Length: 113
Length: 116
Picture 1: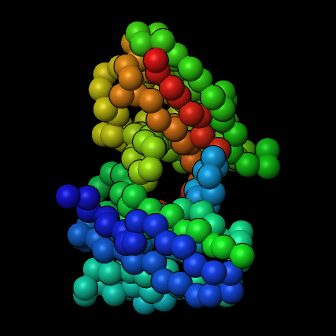
Picture 2: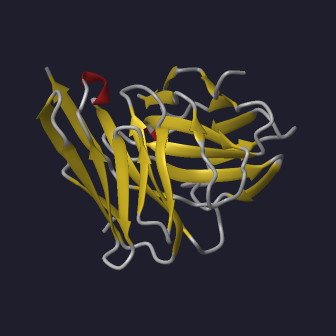
């Protein structure tokens, strides 16, 4: 079982609508949780970084939340645009030694006109 | 440079062939990471360099995989005797870092490797 599970696997929404993507993790303890956006054929781009003590972090129309008690994070996208069509990946960095980061499989978002 | 660059962007290899993938990180970035991303999956950690030192290679799947960063800037990921299961996108990322908790990794576009 992957230590970082994302849902839904894919999502189709209409332009202008809001959506929320989910990330459940079992990695514990962890130093930070990040959300990345990955366009097709490109490398991931960082959207938000939250430490274990933070509850929310915003970046424009993107707002990430973190509940360390339930080990859940969400990424809320407001007023979606066609350019938001991409994969959104949740990444958790374990607190233990080493530099390994654990990526979820991503949620594939399609925004339709 | 403006960002992390990787070359080649695409590589087709015959099974058993050796390949070398290059990563040019952002100038001045201390940390460099390699990841393997299978189709439809998230990236998986391969190895980490701090300057020229390879501090973590726990993600390398076998001894056929070898990475180096001899002068602390450009890095090369080498795969010997490639096999079909090595087909994936290989991503490189670099970071300053400001600190390990808040560091932002900047990713290159990846090299898509197809082993026939």
